[in-house]
Image 1 (cartoon, helix red, strand yellow):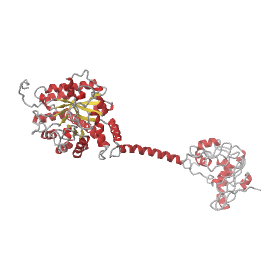
Image 2: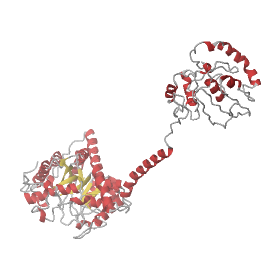
Image 3: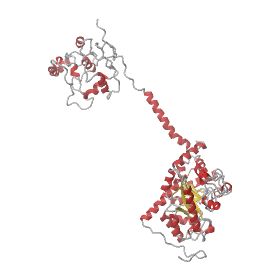
Image 4: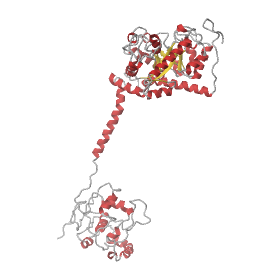
Length: 598
């Protein structure tokens, strides 16, 4: 008795390697075709399905074409299999291009003919040799061969372009599934499972979580009161490693003159001064290299200060001697300090891990009323000149006195523009500052001043001048002296923050900087006792959500770097325009210290 050959759709019954499986599948017309065990039974069992080409009507319609093909297949069973049958030349390119008959058959019928070892004609549809394919057609058959549903064993005598494992290997380029049957013909092996999708999803979630944490951490540490003081300090220290903190004024060189008379052969700034006399007991000493490192100072303007008592006497000589001692201190500590003269050198020194050292001459009387001396100062490395100190000079008026620049004073400003030297207005009177802002073609600075609206000192900057500084592109560098930030003997970090915020509110965040004045003040604020405390000030600013990390970066130093670049750009433009050095004179000098008219 024949076994029941009808089985549920896609169900598979496996026989021995020489046997056949049978799949009963219902077609669109309700009929079926059947493959029986053995060739005769299988071929004879191809039952017509209504509407198919192996129904009587479909068979009659396609009979002429089949007869033409049958003549070429006569006697083929007696000869060895020939070359694989290729696709028609008119077949569109591509691995799955439409195939000409007999490829246009139902998948089940084609598989039966391909798997049938006999050489009969299968009702005009040929035998297995007609279904051998050229390499170009591998991709289409590979999907059938490597499909998870193709569990049938390979019958004896079945031929493919290569052994079955070889076909599977080549099919791997087109089909991701593993070959379901081994070369031995066993059908019990299951296809290799794909990687579970939940693992891929889990990995994606882990990556997204890591990215979210990386983005959220700087925001969490970026202020707004959402981070602890320690976390804000970590943020500031990271920021100052990337961009420099630039301070506009430090009077260490004057203390070296007072305490050591500029004899520095035994002066070890890199060892620290806190435990050494007379530095340890002086209220005016706040600076050494260990504390500069703790404060992460990236660049420092060292002041070549000339007291007003030297005016019209030996002011030029004092200025030269102070510039000399600054340069010698830098050379003695070359592992930590680097003398720089422009913005590019400043940034290079910071990247090298050294403190960029610039020179500023404090007091216009140090020029001796000579543009030639101004040019000499520039050649020696001076990059700003404070136009006055606490005293007037012959061409500019100091804070608290009336009057502004003379014509020679305007010539000084123009010559500084031509050289590429910054004009510093700290200590200058209001009229002098206005005249400078109207004359200068380059940005100017207040190297160590505060906001007059918070402490009404003549040394501080009124709001009108703050707005003029913003229009000029300059920077007000906030001083830490208690008498200028709190108008008294005591001040706190909050007082300094208030001045910074006021300058920012009136002039803008691009026009505020830091100019503490350490070693030139005897009353620093509580919490800002020395040069090691800059990061704590910046971390305090981050408590305010209106201060972004980029804003703090500008305040800390990048605003001053911008000013340096702008001043250098004006210098270069004037050089291209062939602007000649100034030759103006302040007038004939009289007195015992003057040789006579030039």
